[in-house]
Amino acid sequence: MAVETSAIAVNLARVRERIARAAEHAGRDPAEITLVAVSKTFPAAAIREAYAAGVRHFGENRVQEWEAKHPLVADLAATWHLVGHLQTNKARRAARLFHTVDSLDSWKLAQKLDAAVAELAASGPRREVVLPVLIEVRLAPEETKHGVEPEELPALAEAVLGLRHLELRGLMCIPPLLVDPEQVRPYFRRLRTLRDDLQQRLGRPLPELSMGMSHDFEVAIQEGATQVRLGTAIFGARAS
Ligand SMILES: *Cc1c(COP(=O)(O)O)cnc(C)c1O
Image (cartoon, rainbow, N blue to C red; front, side):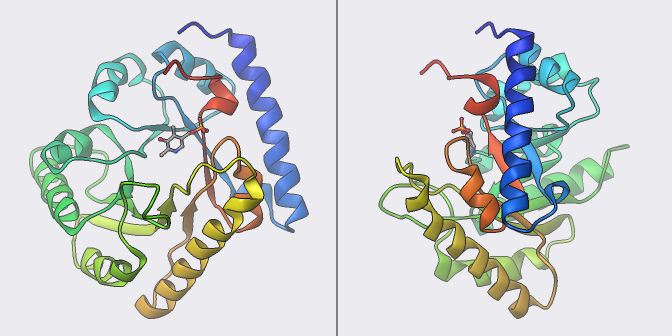
């Protein structure tokens, strides 16, 4: 899908302004909020344009798609996030291709990723020997497929802390797509509360809250998001 250079740059300027305004309204420093540009379905050229306009974090949701695009942008000094559900049989490929997995949703996957990173670390020079991860929490079981149930979160988090090659950085959620962003606020608030409780329980900081997409990121920022994942607002509508 062709996207005008100027369109992406213009969209980014607008989004950054909205992030700054939402942060200021919430009494937060806009610099605390990382913009993750979700480039799924868009070509490598779109990633380059966003990079040229200053974006340094990108999110993709499919290993296969990213395997095709990554070689075309591997020269960029960006952080590549996996934000979609990962099948355990693709853990090794994902560990090689992404700097962070923001959608960890099972103990089995955690173990596979840990083993994959250990293998990479043993087999040669790799960027890091630790893979940062966020646990995806399923806050609306009736609407979203993936993520751990809130009741399962403490046990999974404790188990992940025991893995040498994963670093638990925080939580992520994909709330239901509701027309009015205000309706999504309770989900964001819930994720933050879960994070706060978990920090207490584990006795260690979990600084990251990845929440908020194109239609609701301002509300997410008011509720404490440290990463917003924006696709449409930057790249335009995706072909379905
Ligand atoms: C596609 C996607 C996004 C971006 O969605 P937009 O509504 O286009 O901003 C964010 N997070 C995840 C996990 C996604 O799959």
